[in-house]
Every structure is written in structure tokens, then in C-alpha cells.
Length: 204
Image (tube, rainbow, N blue to C red; front, side):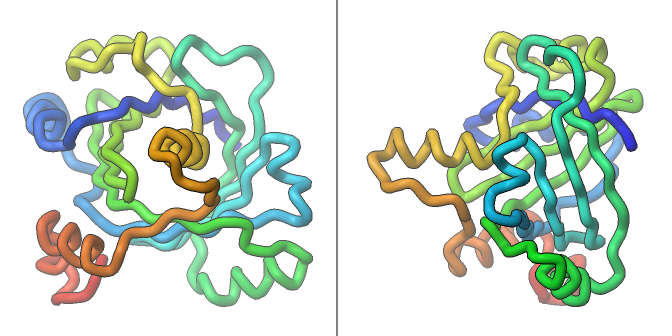
């Protein structure tokens, strides 16, 4: 079990920040596609701030998050996190459903992860916007944000699910939990970000 500390930042695009990361750090994982399924059982997890997620990406992982004791630092979200690698996503899905869990929502994104002096920086492209996440020690996040030209006063200590709800509300759209790329947009990004070249033409 670890305590995850992270801050999100809204971006107009990822290119400028990606160039700064090339100068300051090293690439952990190249751009790749992620498909995420969140499970719940009658809302018992969501109602207590907990999350059970199966992520299909370069590897498949099962993650359980819950609130951490103590107050969050300004702009930083802290959660207790337990995570393990899963060899068979389909079997894990059946196990969770057999335990009474159902898929409460799904969401997609493209992600690249960088390392800067032991602190992780993720660049994320979602169907409703571009974002950066800095994950590391609470005291390291503001310092690295400054080096990257990000303003901690604008940091977002909320989930992508909440940001999606707020975005839909601002657009005058009805509420929706799940979010996914249109097939044509997913294929465009898949090609633009170089995922096809790494996977022999398949989506990454």
C-alpha cells in the first residue's frame, strides 16, 4: 500500500510541456492508449470515496483507491492506493462481476509518462481536453510544477470523472459518467502519437 499524491493541470496542448520534459527528465512510457473500467456495487464504493478500477494499457492493472487520513495540500489530491498487475483482464472482469460488482463507468485516454528526478509526470489526452498530472512527494510537486511552467494556483485536486462532469455542464450537455473517443478521433491520435508504429499497426 502506498499513498498517492498528485496534482492535475489543464493544458491547451501537450507539445510545449513535452518539450520541457525532454530537457528535464526521461521517458518512462511512450504514448499509449488506455481503456479503464470502474466497478462498484450499488454505489457503496463511490459513496465513501473509494475506487476499484481495471486498466487495460501497456499492461493491465487492478487498482483500489481510498481516502488518505489528513487534509490534502492545496491543489494536491492524496489517496491510499493498492495496485497489482493482471495477466488476464477478461478473467478479472468475470471475478469482479462474480463478487457482485458491475461496471459503473468506462473511460479512455492517451498517456505518456515521464520521470523528473524521481517524480512522475503524466501527459494525458482525454476526449474533453489535455492535462498533466504530477505525482510524487507533496513537497516535490510545487517545485517541479514551477520548473515546468505550471501554476500551482491552478492545480486541480479532483478526478477526471469530476472534470468530465464539469466540462459537460459547461457545454450544456446532459450528465454522463463514461467518456470515450469517437473511433475516427481515436485512430487519428493513435497515428499522430506514434502508437501504430510501436504495435505493428494495431491500436496501442
